[in-house]
Amino acid sequence: MSARIYVPIDSTALSLGAERVARAIAAEAAKRGLDVTLVRNGSRGMFWLEPLVEVETPAGRIAYGPVQADDVSGLFEADFLAGAAHPLALGRVEDQPWFTGQQRLTFARVGLTDPLSLDDYRSYGGFEGLTRALAQSGAETVAQVTDSGLRGRGGAAFPTGIKWRTVLDAAADRKYVVCNADEGDSGTFSDRMLMEGDPYCLIEGMTIAAVAVGATQGYIYLRSEYPHAFRTLQAAIGCARDAGYLGSDVMGSGKAFELEVRMGAGAYICGEETSMLESLEGKRGTVRAKPPLPAIAGLFGKPTVINNVMSFASVPVILSRGAAFYRDYGMGRSRGTLPFQLAGNLKRTGLVECAFGLTLRELLYDYGGGSASGRPIRAVQVGGPLGAYVPESQFDVPLDYEAYVSIGAMIGHGGIVAFDDTVDMAGMARYAMEFCAIESCGKCTPCRIGSTRGVEVIDRIIAGEERAKNIALLGSLCDTMLGGSLCALGGMAPYPVQSALTHFPEDFGVPRADKQAAA
Image (cartoon, rainbow, N blue to C red):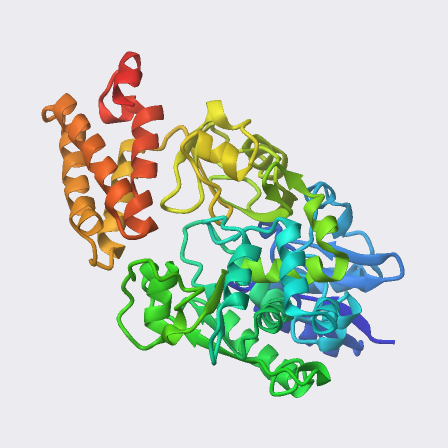
């Protein structure tokens, strides 16, 4: 009987040698006359153990990692096909401490299945949500999404059901569903992992949205730096269409929904929904003024549902298991789970999906293992390059949308980037403002000019030029950007700057005793 071996095809695993490992396993098996079946799965999210190789045995899937091509012959010698002992043996992934505390709802299949196998997807509950959506009215589906408490996972945390309801109620001859897969925030990779490891989950979520609001055409707007995700999505869409899950007659329902992938050109601003729409229409990616909202006049002026990958990928489990099931996870108004992405100076980086309510300290130490350098973690940027820097004194604040807003921070897309005590926070603040200046679309003055002037003012503060005067000027400039920018790029660039100055004034040459004045 053929031995089944899983080697990830996820971009992170590939960058660490997974393709070489897969070829080495195939070659060694052929050399020994052994019959093996190689399955290229998604990543389990334990990046420090990639490439992670799993072997299907009577005792379950036994993992080995991190495996390099040079380790393969030794694994065969040790009889790893039977799950035998070896220095790289880890046991079952589900028994690892990293996994036992997680609540994997969105990522339930990632790493378990062949990403392009419809049989695998269906065997783990795939398309059950779509089946239920097709058997009820659009209003009933929208009500379930609303009752689940799902909020946008792209960063704004707007209630998904309200957005869908607006599109459902809008009268139009054509409606669209658009997925914002332009995952450009530093330290984020959950969208990429899901698109590469479980693309049918995204396809199902978008199809449910289309059926619910009456849309017939969908687009996935994908960042240009994700070529592996692009190929996987293209193949998955083709398979789904051939099997009747997309096209003119979705699952024999008489309802039509077509789906296409469009590649961006590398502009960070196109992660903003209206800039993305401009790009999709073939125009330069610049921010649109609101109103009208995209739900009323979006793509090509038609009502459009816009959500990010994690939002759409959360929908199938809500429809298949029920709104109450999903709502039972989380705290306050932050319901369900969020895939947190651990990056930066940590021993164990990767993806952790947990219900809202755990703390940054738990993520950094229980999952992340502390800093990779062994030094104290001094600051953590949560929510991407526009997120605030959170000091150690706030590591125990629950990860909840409202709780983070109350401390001047945001959860955003769930990216966590850690820095040890060697970090220069004045330099990080300058970088944040410079990033805004480089990536600004240029449409509004507060962002276009404010970010450039902001870099100049920070440089003067660091150089000690009229420090008190320039700190006051920087505060005024940040207020203008916060209140006057057309979108979140200019409107949130002050977050990392102000948080760095507030919590780490000494890095700007301001004595700790004057911390309150710096704030």
